[in-house]
Length: 292
Image (cartoon, rainbow, N blue to C red):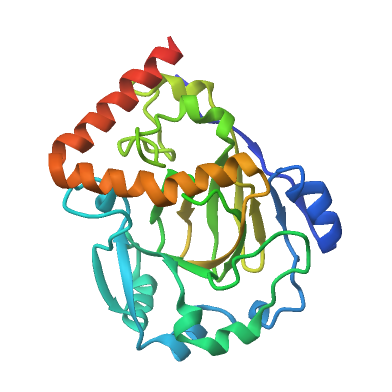
């Protein structure tokens, strides 16, 4: 019997594109795209790899996350790390073999300012959050849970040193993705690399996109797009973030940042694991009703 697969189409790819054409054809129209050589003049393209990052930032203490573990416990707040260690030690760990530990939303450039000399923000109409160039690291087979970003940012996601697989879904597919109430993530039991369609039948109706990123590639993720990443080899990425173009999405971002996450942390504190269990049960029952 043939194994059932997700309904995924390849994200469009282009070799090169001007900043003006990128904005008009993709950002303005909110269409994902992979650009293989968007910033060929960046020093980062020739300099940035794991060894270089270790050489200039190896002594910095970084937060680590253990795949889905941190989102499954009521004892942790939103985005609270599982442990911390020196960046150099973590990079050594990545090179030894598969590890579940990842770094995400880490502003290393604030702690190592010289990295800011290796790239520049594209000159286009997007309103970049220039104080927040975030880095993400992962080892072979480490996974980022399916989620969308709290601030509905337009994301330019640049990958360095290695390969990773990226799955995207637009907000129109949210009804099939087993979204947890009062959260921005899919059900923690749902493995998008090996989905159980008997337990999560609505997923069979979801239509998404997929690509693999290599060193120097840039993936554009429009505001509110769901995304799940799997590191095929050790590597890291940098995201440049820009405010939502849509006023509706901007209002959603404000609600998420200033109310939703604090409400969720409050309910975790009051109800403990019962709050997580409630959200997971609700996501299953609500989404399966729509699949019927």
